[in-house]
Image 1 (cartoon, rainbow, N blue to C red):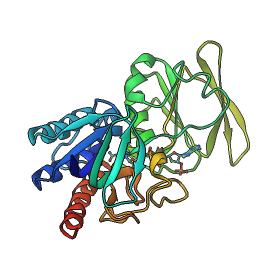
Image 2: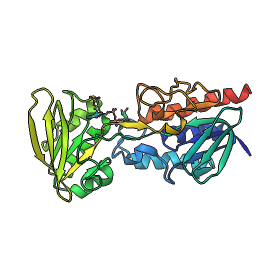
Image 3: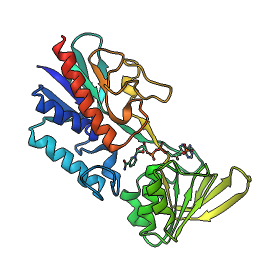
Image 4: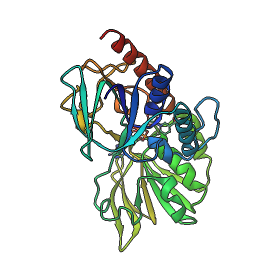
Length: 305
Ligand code: NAP
């Protein structure tokens, strides 16, 4: 069987693409790495900027997206793409279980993974106090002191989530202002139990069996200090899941697949949507909009074949 389009990834971009593809009556399948749709938003405590659903949790929003795709009888397959042959008009995608899928077009909506800090103690205490998901692990640190590293939307959202349950939250950010939206950062700064360590970096994560402290350096004053914390939540961005596609389609120096608003890559029939592609704003709404744009471009591509 040769599909019209295969969508790789089931985050907001992949699910929006699936909804558009089903509505366009394309013969398609969605390949998802885990049998849980939603991508990164599964771990987002609260999404307050997606129109029509103020205050919804990322998990609940992802369920709504998935239910919408299910309502249209979307076919989902679980597996990891390990091979991507796109030379010919018929592209072949191979999964880790050896299954091959043939398709005329592909939408890569594979998202990204959390970036690591690369400091001493990070790997050692991973899962023993070091976490990349506040909403997954935050409850373990109820009434304790924790640190959040980063200054983007995720770091600030995580810190707000933690401020509600932890005794003290230190936010360690390398610059003197947040990258996150103003409304989020204002909300964070309104918590009395939040201390922002501006212009600062974590140099080392210390502990015995579990995390007990972080060594922090102020980049402007060079001052070093230690903060007693039981948990360190690292939220310093994502690395695009583009490794398997890198040799096949053009990427930028950070690994993002180069594609514009129509999601077209440099390879005919291959489209990139959501966080995995080069773009200015990585948000749920822009990922979802990519899904729509990608399928519109896929339809044009298929019509011209
Ligand atoms: P981000 O916006 O790229 O922010 C990453 C943060 O980590 C930045 O503050 C950055 O510092 C810092 N950082 C990066 N590398 C670092 C390092 N090695 N050491 C110390 N700090 C480091 O990433 P994000 O917060 O994960 O968000 C990812 C995307 O998802 C963003 O586009 C965001 O807007 C979006 N998002 C949207 C929503 C929503 O729509 N509600 C929710 C969550 C996330 P600098 O500021 O100095 O660069």
